[in-house]
Length: 423
Image (tube, rainbow, N blue to C red; front, side):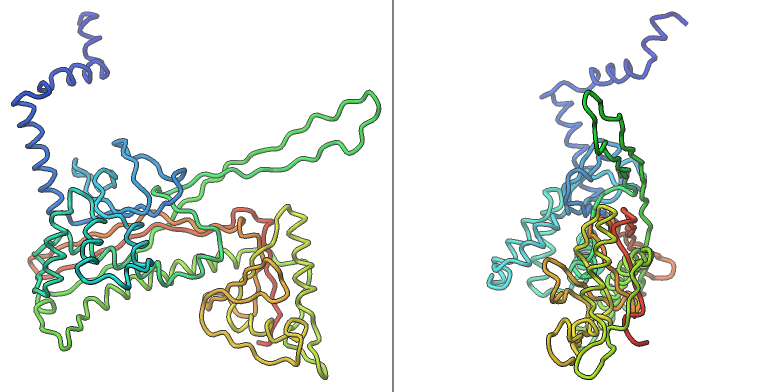
């Protein structure tokens, strides 16, 4: 083989040759080529069976796909890669969930008429799918009957939006930690080991040369998922009062994903090291006042975390454990009375200026977790929904997958303690 033949066989020269062999811009061949490719792409999207969601809002945590596409924040993309692979290409944007969520929380959402709301929803769909979405929304608005074969790609997209919406509304414990969202399945961070400078330097002496050390950390996401399926007969039923059990099943799937993610955060908090300062029973009572002052205990734990260069700003516990803190006379300033909190959420951290206290039943009873919020991360990765059809059994189904994880990023930034309430 000649040298020139070997040269032309190299991959980079083949790519150059292939580019120059493309139909000339503006030629009939070029127009036919582009139109055919556009029609094939549109047909694939019309028959879509899956979608991917990029949850990231921070552009630093959004990476390009193998094809070089970078997804927009909080957006849903067409799921199947055009080469037949099962991976997100992030090429075809189908829905702007961020804009949709902002609209739902705006004043317009409650005051818009049906017609103006309809126009607002049309605007959040991507251009490649907006025409089909428009027809789907018109059919829904008119109250017509839609079967599983009608607008199948838009229906699966609508299911995905419902699942994401349920999770966004119900997930409260995620606010108790630092949340990072990414479109990839792993994130790499750096941990820094500090050094001390020379405290005293004599005349004509130089300070010692010292340096810190960076350690690379890679945190991988874990997958959760669920599958729901229903028969043709179930779909063909005329359910009383318009209540469709399939819709309730989808909501169950979404809410259970929330439960799993809350459990991951609870597990991270449970892995914190125990505070050196021993906790006493906050409910103990003597004559007319509480025996133990929890504010002094919390101050001592703050000092432990501060010694590790953290700044404690967050406390978490179960609602019951928090009640013993809130009813302590050193906190309430009066005769102890029960301060009952039943559900998850944020509660007042009385006597602790600048602190946030979160309660959640997912946490372990009789424990209190005190930490610098920067030290506990919840990493939210991409999610995927896809439907399937088994013609032999007459079964339709939806499969949901999501990648996420929670971990302690800075081990010295948090402490836990127990023995603070009666068992």
